Length: 253
Ligand SMILES: [Mn+2]
Image 1 (cartoon, helix red, strand yellow):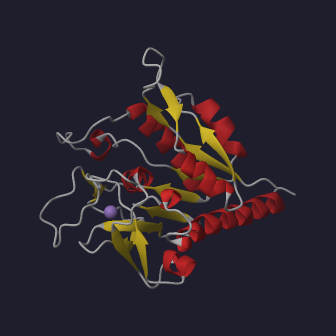
Image 2: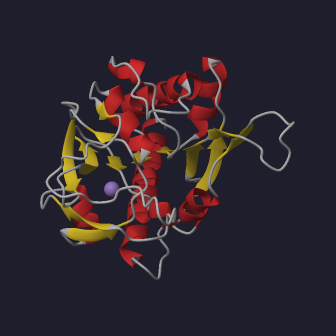
């Protein structure tokens, strides 16, 4: 049984060869996190060809919706804020299609950073396009001074009745932070399960059955010797895929 995990990709400028076409890519850390916790990662292309997407989708046991550029505000009926940049409606639409299929089939979904925001938009929620400065405390969510995704910048408080707190066996966990947007209005199909000290939603779970987890931080980039607990999230994800695949092969007999 293969635990094939699709990882969404982004459009990246090729700085080494500026004359070359846009690169489809994703950070190494996502692939390593999946490999180190029992999964087999495969990078998903961006295409509007639904037949091609579906053909790839059918092979996957689960999907990791990775981080990246801002989501097009038109998808949640807002005009773009001046700080909303590098949107890609093509990437958004391809990911929304994959998300719709995975949610319908109850294929495990792990959504990281932009991925969590996409999950909220998919279900009808909205985003803070630029994290407001008037929150109860002013935590630095984007580390402008260090630009270091490895650095721990704030703690998350977890809901006691959440899957996340069961996965970590803890109600707090230190997190890195690399986002200028955040969930504003939470979609009704999601429940908030993690918050930073200033009250921003930093983790969500689906309300119906199935593994649907979103986190605002970048657990894939947190090194194991810094916060070992974060790798539990990827283990739980691949375990959920294993269970899903077992159930699928049983029902197809
Ligand atoms: Mn944060």
